[in-house]
Image (cartoon, rainbow, N blue to C red):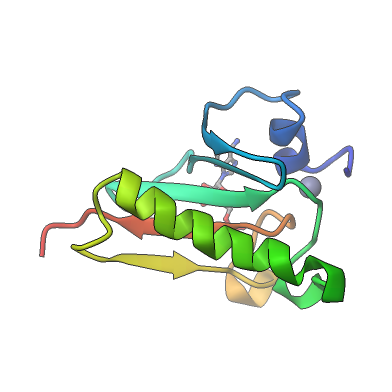
Length: 110
Ligand code: AMP
Ligand code: ZN
C-alpha cells in the first residue's frame, strides 16, 4: 500500500466509497466522474502502478480484473448490448491515478 495513493486509501477505507463488489484481490466502485451511463472501476487491492509494471506473479490479478469486469457487465445489464474495457497507461495514455485499474463503460443507447 502507498500512503499517498487515492485508490489504496479507498481500498483501505480511509476514503469513502461504496464497493459494488469485493473479493480477496479486487474491488469495484463507480467512477466519480462517469463518462458513460455505467462507468465502473475494477481495481486490484495490490498496489501496482500500471500495466507496464505487473510482474509474473501478478498476471492472475490482471486476468481477474477482466473476469470481474465481465461479471459486472452482466450484473449491470450491459453485457449483451456491449461495453468498453480500458486500461490507461502512464500520462501519455491518459492515466491520472497510478494504481492499476480497469475502466468498464457502457449503457449507451445505440
Ligand atoms: P485514469 O485516467 O485511468 O487514471 O482514471 C482514473 C479515474 O479515477 C478517473 O476516471 C476519475 O474520474 C476516477 N476517480 C478519481 N478519484 C476517484 C474517487 N475518489 N472515486 C472514484 N473514482 C475516482
Ligand atoms: Zn495504490
